[in-house]
Length: 363
Image (cartoon, rainbow, N blue to C red; front, side, top):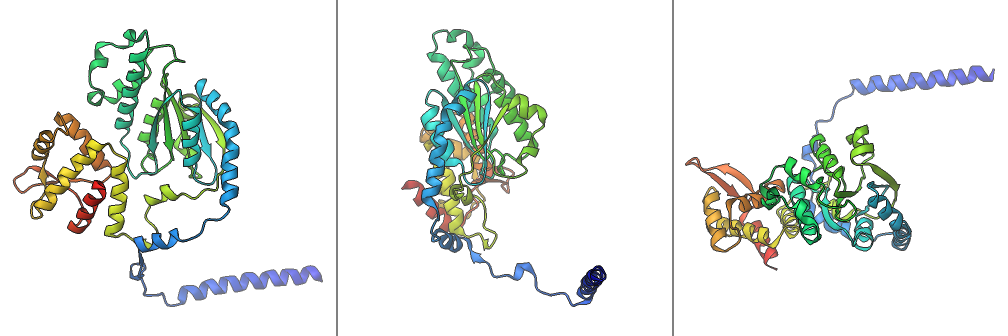
């Protein structure tokens, strides 16, 4: 009898469920659209978010501090050719930077912020090659690594040449290393297959060691078996920190907000501060020209080169192009065709926003 009652209840539930689905189909659809929602200005929303008091700060600090006991183990794994991959909930930026500054003092460290929207890996490889070359010049037997090719500027060499240099038998392997630290190797600027395969090739070089973090649950799907076990040669470490993604979140638009000029200035300022002083000054030349000639379609590249050379900011067009590539990768500068057919550069900001950005740079 009881079983019969249970069957009746299940039948009634199923019947009501499908009746509800049918009535939902026949009902009127709302005419409202998502675009009609009055979104909050992103700057205002971020200001409100910043007022939220963080919780469990002492516990988080204590947890991160507890991982310091693993530093010797991590350094040992790096020394013997493994790559460190840190995963777990929470930002691992502070943890990795502390590890690099305390346990990797014998290494030259190059840091890549994978949470940026775009990253130029050619520039990363160039910087690593330059750092390794400086190390090799200090080695007593560096002459064998100082071939005529090494005298060629690294920024004019191909990626294959740069990787070959990083993998070359310049010195005993335990003497010269460049450590590549990547915050969020699964970030938006590195998430494509081409970038991951290039990073894997760099990580496999004999004079390179890699430390990286991941945050996306599907990050391991970026790699195949060869990349995981041979090229990256990962040692996986579960290190949840539960720390907020304060810095990483700056570069991601908030869902409940629309962009604003002030937010664009803030983001551009953060990106410019991460570049070299020379790159900042080149950008300033372009910005000042755009403010002085608001009706122009942009600044011709040859005019920018002449202005920068007169200020001793660049010595060649190759150097200027490397700066411009950085600007384009970070979407600070765009290119458009002038009415006379000449390519011109312009900064995609309003006059007020650009003036504010120049003030921020000068501070």
